[in-house]
Image 1 (spheres, rainbow, N blue to C red):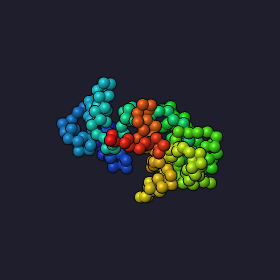
Image 2: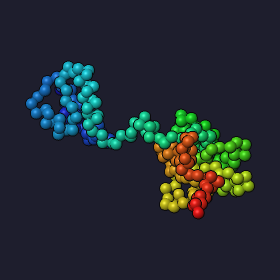
Image 3: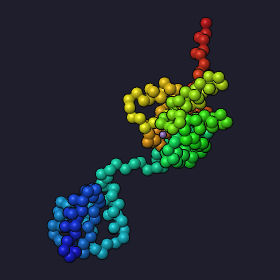
Length: 233
Ligand code: MN
């Protein structure tokens, strides 16, 4: 009950505003009238409360209204997603990424899980870091200044032909083109995650390369794979 525009009129105009079609609306009134319920339903008003409203009733109405309709699918809450993450030992990871925001984003996904992240902003910087330190895994952006992810991967694999070993390289690329995965794999990368990087996908990929101690590796290196044992004569 308001002057000029009453609550029903305001609710009806709110519903016409862009972005407000699915907004939860609760109506408060000090005097319920016959037919109010039908008007509320026709305007998409979620709940109708008689004033004075008790705090517990208001909270209950808000929670019911918010819970009973979700026009936008809600992301799963963080704890349950964290629980789904495949176990993985803590890794020394070289992150090769030129975009500062993406660097922070990936660091925030990995560091809370105990991974140590060293960042290089282009392929040449990555090669310089690799000449001094060893890493369990490399996360390689494809589009990089100076030396891109494909060139850097080729250089790393060429060096490994002399030194032995094989550091897993996981490509991160915004290219959504079909065949991009194949291009990454043929360039010597071991796996591929799409950008923007999804935390769950990234962690599941890392876990493939670094299962916790005691679990068997999903991707054995060539050196570890043994020929099938001979059958008894
Ligand atoms: Mn980039």
